[in-house]
Every structure is written in structure tokens, then in C-alpha cells.
Image (cartoon, rainbow, N blue to C red):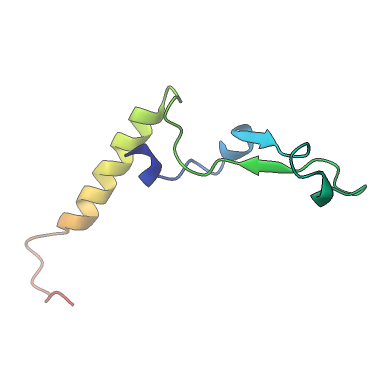
Length: 74
């Protein structure tokens, strides 16, 4: 379930790995380090359950909408 949620963009640079040794042909003198960043919620991240629960509440509110609203569904 955690992979259904995106990691906060502020935290993404801290959840990266150096891929320079695996893809040395992709590196250059101007860009010697090739980094890959994880964009989905980390399962071993201590605050992940809190973030996912908060996001689930937002998703639930969007899905349920306002049942008293008289506009027609599109």
C-alpha cells in the first residue's frame, strides 16, 4: 500500500542512491555523479505510516465528496 503514495518532494533528495558505478557511460566531466531518487513512500521510513494515514484521509474525503451537494455526477 505504501507504494501507492508519493514521497514528499522535500525528502526525495535524501532518499537517493549513487548510480555512477553501475552506469559509468552516462557520467561526464560536467556531471560525474549520477543519482537516482526514490519517489514513492518508503516502507522502512519511520514516519511513513503517519504520512500514509494522512494522505488516506485526504483521498477518502475526495472520494466521498459532499453528499449534500445537489450537483449531478459527471
